[in-house]
Image (cartoon, rainbow, N blue to C red):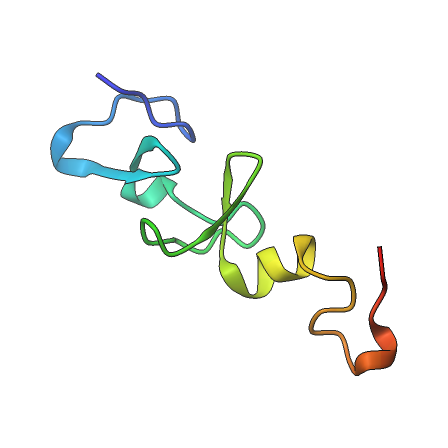
Length: 77
């Protein structure tokens, strides 16, 4: 029986959601930053952890300055 990567409890077939190559409980598949419940396949991933596309993943790992003002706030890395 596979174990949920978030809570480490067994995931039964009826409650299983597959995402990032693992089986999760539906309530355990949440954004690492804001805790928003995510749908399988409709989220971003960084180092094996799920994130909502917008705003969390974009703000954390997108281009510097994303969503924080005009073009003058952009930082080149």
